[in-house]
Image 1: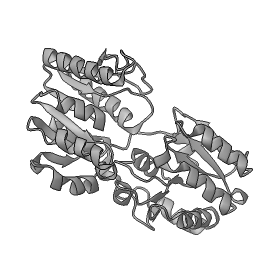
Image 2: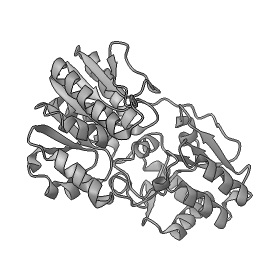
Image 3: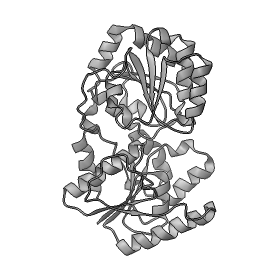
Image 4: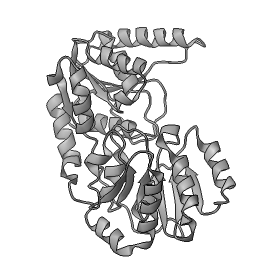
Length: 347
């Protein structure tokens, strides 16, 4: 039996991949159990996958809740004794590492060296514990940067997230031509700066901006749109279960993130023939995007360059067509079969 420990299956690239991995394993006749905090499932999950919940808010006290989750995990893991305990996120990985279970696989889902020193030490302490079997990095850049801090560096390997098999019609889902943002609305994703750049560079004269995603910054972004008089040019769609029609029919996908782990939506966009404008955030964008070939890259915080690129793609059809024609280049390593083959070798 394989045990996948994750907070929930709601709204995220890691969560989407957890469901894919679970489905892949049961399709091959393996017994799979998901251990989750929340009964939130936004992605297709095979009915053969067993689900067990841990109430992570059993107590009002945060400290008591953490202790309870840890003890509950300890009991469940050692009573189940799975062939592999698999985690795909930072917090789940630290809990799993502390379980002393000798068949544990942990993952870096975001760039750990961008956190404050205390959180970095958390990562490095737990992921260096001797019973960790494998440490999976979602991008090669992340693995290279973190490897010097891992005592048993041979445990580390890179497995990206896969491009899903997508069949999306070409039917337009928005009236005017538009840029698309598909992102959790969190401060580090910098969606607010995309809106400000859109306003400053007069991009409403050329294209709309459609933002698919939800999060803690939603109310702030609504106020920002109102302050700049951008309604109805900037559309905040909230969480969209199927953002692919928006991605496929947009001018390009736009990201100004301050940090990533592996931006899964990038390979999905390229798989749909949509180029990308992105910051060179650690990590992933510079591996996925070849500047001037299938997208455009700017330094983190260089919003003037972001504005120039958005304006250029909105008005330069020749450049846009050239980028669109190259979106399939380099996607072979992100195919479903290639990624799952690597995971099966690890498991």
